[in-house]
Amino acid sequence: MNEQDQIQIAREVVDAFGASNWERSSQLLSNTVYHELATQRHITGWDDILEVFKGWKQAMPDIFGTVTSAISSGNQVTLEITWEGTHTGPLVTPDGTIEASGKSQKTPSAWIFEFEGGNIKESRHYFDLLTFLQQIGAA
Image 1 (cartoon, helix red, strand yellow):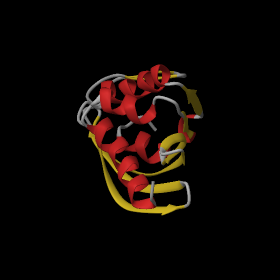
Image 2: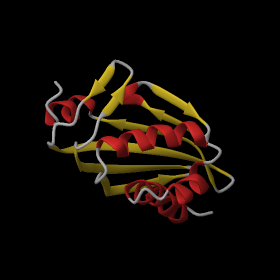
Image 3: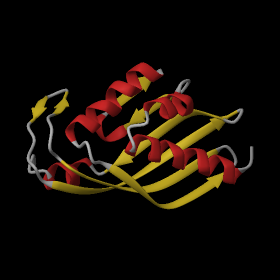
C-alpha cells in the first residue's frame, strides 16, 4: 500500500464518522487502538471506539470534519481537520454531562494514523478541547 492509499483510508475514517457510517468505520478501525488525547481516553477495540464516537454524535448529530491538509511518511499519515457541529444533545464526560447549549463549534485538530499491513494499527487524535468547551459555553 502506497502513501496516497493510506491518506485515502485516513480520510475515509473522518468521512465515515461524519456520516455516522458505523459499518465502514468498523471496517477501517476494527483492530486498532484509538487515543483521544484531549480527553485522556485510550481505547482498544471497535466496540469501545464506537461508544466514544456515538457519544460525540449524540452531542452534535451534525458534526463533520473537513480535512485541510494531509501528509504521509512511511507507515504514518497525519491529517489536519476542522470539526464543525452544533451542540444539540447531551455530551457525557467522565466529570458529568454537559447539557445541550444549541451553540455551534468549530474546532481544529490533528489525527495521526499508524498503518501496519495496509490496516490502521493505532491512531492519536489531538484537538483543542478548551476552544471546543468555550464555544459551546461550558468553559
